[in-house]
Length: 99
Image (cartoon, rainbow, N blue to C red; front, side):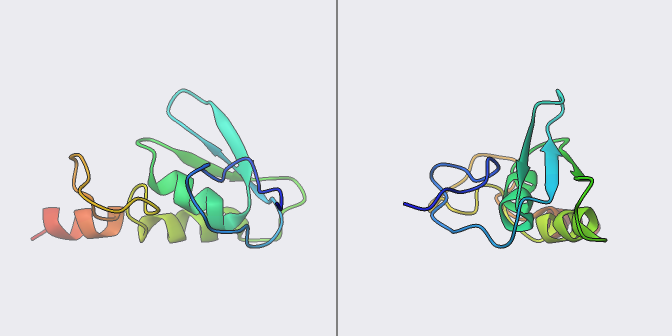
């Protein structure tokens, strides 16, 4: 079995996409380093999360991760109903609020 980055949730079946380039921190500053793919999925699932590029990351890694997270629904690897707040992505939630 291939090793995955620390940001990959154990239930998320997707492989890493690229090297570990960013750190995702939660509201209490607990963090995990990850590839942009898993970091975005983790960030989308956190309330008050933040993302920072690692020192050797390519330019734009953190903003790409942040942008991707905005379009991903929380815990996107799970099927079925989601607890509130809305099971939609951050972008979809903002669109509904702004109506």
